Image 1 (cartoon, rainbow, N blue to C red):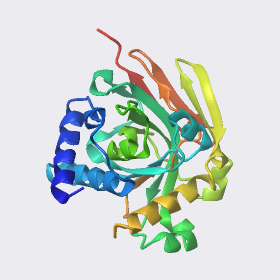
Image 2 (image 1 turned 30 degrees about the horizontal axis):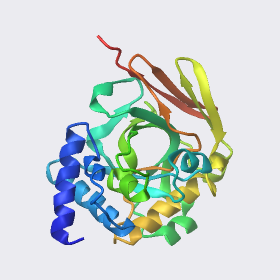
Image 3 (image 1 turned 60 degrees about the vertical axis):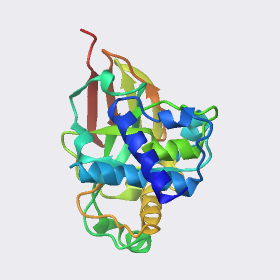
Image 4 (image 1 turned 90 degrees about the vertical axis):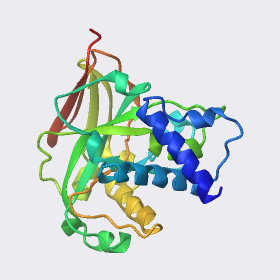
Amino acid sequence: MTKSQVGDLAQRQLADYDAHDPGRVFEDSAVSMTIAEAYQVQMEVAALRAARGEPFAGYKIGCVSDTVQRQLGLSQPVFGYLFATEIRRSGAMIDSGAFDCLAIEAEFAARIAVDIPDASWLREHPDRSIAAFFPVIELHNHVFRGATRTAQELIANNALHAGVVLPAIEGSLRDAAELTGESISVLRNAELLGTAAGSSLPGGPFCSLLKVAEHLATFGVRLKPNEIVLTGSPLPLYSVRPGDHILVRCSGLTAVEMTVRPVA
């Protein structure tokens, strides 16, 4: 695609996202792009959002675990952006009307402590790199428009990301090895939906963090202090409906919860 085509697609993508009707361009069978072009569209949308006053808050990696790859019918991790305008804290009331097919994932996130030059530096200085690990609830527009599910559609739609709920207190766990053995659970209306350990992610959450750093390096970007990185979910996406209460907990860390606003 030409730079002009990328820009046009990004404008359409952003308009549909703002209308809570994301990814409509993929209903058109004539729309075709490579993985690299899908990331170009994603980055152009991110640039448009930043230009209108939505600061970057961090990054995410998704489709990491076998569980999520099977659920989405894909075979490779994808990356995306987090925006400060879409960050919420535990106890948030979520309006399902602001999403398309709202779904959630439970996962571990990292708060970056220092400027990280590259993945090699991160690998050598894990104790200096992370301010804290903590559980989060990631919010998704769980919708695909194309005739078949593709990594390109997932990527161009910012890996389905539509927000994140952080715990009230992020905690002080910094040991990535300890996190690998930590389990994370999701409850919907007090019913346990699933439990999985950090080790369910290939190499654990810290390996996901390394992959994010490697991905960013290909674009000349580095992780910076106070940014958040979502490390991928060992559990599937779960659909939620108005009135649902979601609780994500793990034994050694602060829980995080949200409620989907009931229908009036």
